Image 1 (cartoon, rainbow, N blue to C red):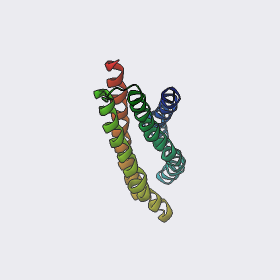
Image 2: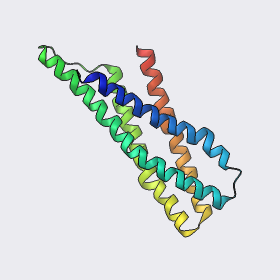
Image 3: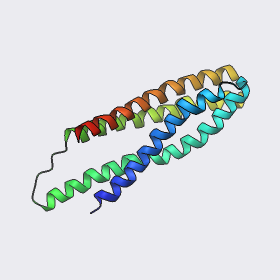
Length: 156
């Protein structure tokens, strides 16, 4: 049965994604506020560059493992001669997960590019502005992720 290992991989990837966002938002960002703008922007750029590279893989793993779990259950139902009806909680998780992936794409491919350009140009105010935008969207993604986990826990 493929469902169990896919669920394990899915949960590990979700924990990494949510944990990374929580760490950067609640612990790293406040700690670097004591630094001068140039040092703060450069440090956050370096951290986020590494984090977002890992998250590209992690988000792909979350999406593919989720799709794999749905396909696995569909296949088991079909083999048993049953109709597969995706539970409402799975539909909600799928939609919100896709929203989170889209938000991550915006953060990584639009906002982080602004931060990267600002760092390359030594424009620390522009870098700070880009970081502020990233912070808002990371907070939104973290809130959506916590809402998904909470809703699924309540549905069990």
